[in-house]
Image 1 (cartoon, rainbow, N blue to C red):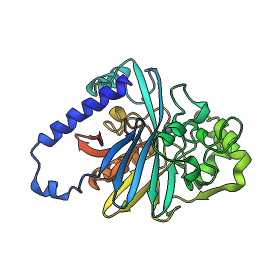
Image 2 (tube, rainbow, N blue to C red):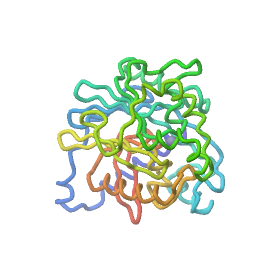
Image 3 (cartoon, protein in one colour):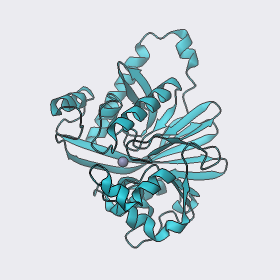
Image 4 (spheres, helix red, strand yellow):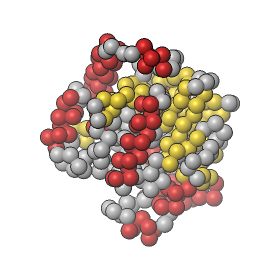
Length: 320
Ligand SMILES: [Zn+2]
């Protein structure tokens, strides 16, 4: 994809420029060593985080014309300028989808499940890319879901109802479950989100879905972090091993050039824009301060990288 490649190259130049900046010795000493990271197949990228392995696996992209209202609280010219500053096209948006496989302590955990057969023709690549990365879907023992938007859950079951990860324990944030399965609450929410994907995916398997309260460890060694705002139960996950931290941020931000760069901007998909803004500020700052390796569902390829402060916002620096 030309646009993501261009963005990748641009960010690469940004990294080189950042490296050339004078940096206090103390600051450099605080940095944890660069993780060992490499591409394992087109659409799959792997990094070591201490004793854990994290593989970012692409589910493809979706592209649409940029329209007024994509960012609720910025004008179209402001949005176009931010895209231009990042070397991205200003007439179209290409949104990547990336799920993450964390292998640690003999477990193989998938974070979010892709569009399956229900997204854009350029999406739904997760199973193919897992295969290319040498990961058998039947070997996934746990699936952790960040939130219930269709692009994150539709890949769990196909059109015929078959489970994509048949051996996996399916774990979801309880507040997310409670919201989407309560018709009255959903109908009263701004925009009254439909919930068709939630019904299709979860209704027939409701008894087997494990609901966890964010804040604990749904899987030993993997912490869940309440990150509400994008949706009522939106949840992030983190794992720390040998003093390195990986955090899967889900939809904390959409397009990085817009919402990592301008954390106060609200994408139209944020259900509670103010809660989402505060959550975004809090977690982006934690990621920058802690030198975390972050994964984001809609971050540019390979979807894994670091958050660094710039002005009143941040940049996402992809691993390469
Ligand atoms: Zn999403």
